[in-house]
Structure formats: structure tokens, C-alpha cells
Image (cartoon, rainbow, N blue to C red; front, side, top):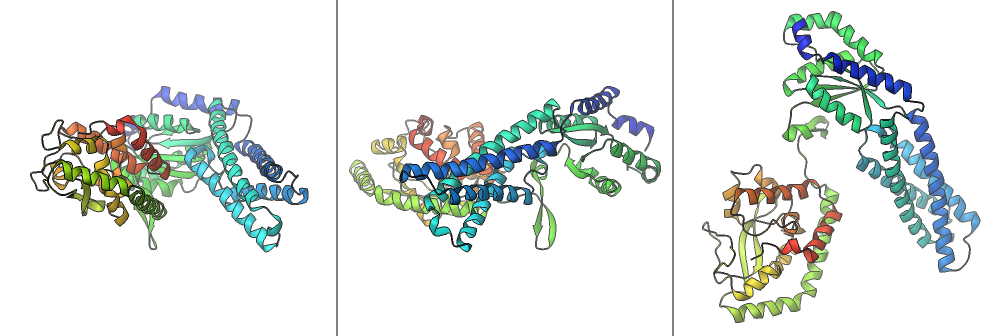
Length: 492
């Protein structure tokens, strides 16, 4: 590597001193290892689970039958439940790399540990033929309260580990960053926030020519290895642009001599490549750039709710359907229902049902959105649109599987064509089924989209919903649709 290239890639002396100062401060102030800290927290979790499980059996037994539960049955069971949660957590390495784990993954692991522990416990009750003596209600209550306890304890544990790491009370994971100075500073700040201490920053090696590569393979390679080894790093992070990926492969071979975790972060990269993850396709390991927004289990849960809710809604709302149909027929000539071709899942055309709210219906390329005080809207139609009752027939679309209760609102084909060249990737909002109501609508982004900015805001809210879907979010949107004023704004 040339001296000029090395100087251009090296951090400033002040930055290097800051890294060394941080390393010295960490060594001086850390007085407890992370493993010892986690051991104490795991022991505390074990005791709390035991007390909670036994306490649940006592409360239920006294409340339902007025007697104290069998001591020889429920105390050993509480100890067994706590032991199973601990064993599952250790076996699945839930505590490994806690400082680098995001909170949601740590909590999800805790919920899985509780579920597996109770499944094992239930199997033991059956195999040992003691299930007849064990209260089913007690079992379910114990499962519920232990799950709540574990989620709460692990949320507190995650926060305490981050706080103790930041304060230097426990050892942090030590990282070395290899990369350009500016991305290094940004990455260091994010790692520090996650509880990882950057102890050294090194420049990227220069493989721009064969001479520099050969020189690096002799002296510079040993210098880089020695620097990483002296830093006693747990993790080495390579910050590389897309063009530097071949260099990252060479570095991986070089750094394989060290007992560390090696990470590659693509610097100055946005879009799909920034969220890439390792995947598998058959027996091949791939870099998966995109994945469906909902898993198979997510789609099953969402579809089950849609089928049940739409069937119940059509049955319970049948009198309202009849009343609205009568009002429409008495108000203006024409059909009760209005059907329009719109884009559904994966851009497939679907015929969407609505109560007719206009004197005329247009499903051609000359489609025009309804405007405030639109003369085409009938008197009854104005009421139906403001109250969202005109959307109720879409329950038929939900029941047939073309739509969902919650999702991005389906646009007329002509409206999609008007914006698909202006906003990219506009059709990504069709990666889930369209819905009767959606996140954009309950936040006030419904009605006429006569400007690019209005459609952009709706599009951004639709993507937020797709990227953050959960059943709880669907329930929140349904409640907001029923009770939030913003869900009815811009309805005309």
C-alpha cells in the first residue's frame, strides 16, 4: 500500500487517540464480566419464575375452591417450569451476544422459551400420568403469567445491560472497524448505542494494483493481524463499498487466523442491498435481497381473521345492507352496487364492490376521482361516503379472498397508471392484499390525490404498514377506523 493511500484512508490522530482513550477507560472502569452479570440475572429470572408459577397456583386454588393447593404437586411443578425455561434459553443461546441483540429479538426468544418449556412440561405431565391431578386452569394461568413475567424481566435485563455497558460497569463487546474514516465514525456511534465498544479503527487495505496486493500480503498483512490481535477484539467490522467486496473476501481469508466474528457492512448503500440477508435456496446459500412481507404463518392468521370477520359482518349487517339498498333505490335510478376494476394482490385485477354513491359510474380510462361538492355524488351517496358505509359490500371481496379487512386501499387501474411512473416502486403496495381500511386512511390520507405529494404520503404510509405488519397493528387500525376522527377526514 502506498503511503499516500494509507494517509488518505487513515483516521486522524485525534480520532486514533479517542479510540485508545476509550479502550483505556473501558479497561479501567470495567469490574464485572458480562457472563457473571448474565449469570446473576438468569438466577434472578429462575427465582421469579418459580415464585410466579407457584403464586399463580395458590391464587387460583384459593380463589376458585378456597383451599391451599397441594404443596407436593405445585411447588415441584413451579421449579420444573423455571428449570425448563432456563434450560431452553441456554440451549438455544438466547443470552449469547446479548449486547448486540435488538430488543425485539431478545423478547421474542423469551416468548419462545416459555412456550417450549410449557410444551415440555405438559408432555411430562402426560408421560408421568400425573395430568389428572393437575388443574388445567392453573396450567393456562401459569403459562400466561410466566410469559408476561419473562417479557418484563428480559426487557429490564436488556436495558440494564445497555446502561451498564455504556457506564463501563460491565465489559462490552470489543470491536475493530476497518474502513474509511467518515463511515467509521457513523458506525462507531451506532455500535456504541447498541452496547458495543469500538477499540480500534484501521484503514482499508489498497488492492488497486498487483504491487500493492503483493506488498500487503507480506508486511502489511502481518501488521493488520497484529493490530487486530492486540486489540483483543470480539468482532471485526469491514466497512466496504459494493466495489470493495472482492477486497472483503481477501480480508476474510487473512483475518480467519483470529478467533473473532467477522462482519461486512456495505457503506453508502441504500435500497434492497442494504437490507440483504443470507438465505437458502435448496442446497445453495444465497444473498437474499428481498423477501415476502408476510410469512406463511402470518398469512394464515390474517386470512383466518378475514374469513371469520367478513362472514360475521355480512350476517350481522344484513339489515343495514337492506336499508341502504332501499335508500339508494329511492334516491336515484340505477343499480344498488357499483363494481370497479382495481389492482389487487400482485397487481392482479379484481372487481371491487361498493354501494353506489354517484348518479353515474365510470370504470374507463377517463376515471375521475370524487372531489369536494362533486355534482355526481347523490344525497344518499354523500352520507354513505362520509360514514364509510359505501365500503361495506367489500366484505364480499374479503370473504372471497380477494381483499383483506386491513391493507392498502385498492386504487382504480387508471389512478395507478397515473402515478406508477412518478413514484417508484409504486406497485410494492400490492405485495399484500388490499384492505377495506388501512394505515394511510386512519391517518387522514384518503380521498382525492390531486397532487404528487398527497399520493406520496399515502404511499409512504402503505409501505410502513407492509414493512411493520403485525396482527396487533391490524387490530389497532380497525379500532381507529371505528373511533378515530382522522379515519373520516377527506371523505366526500
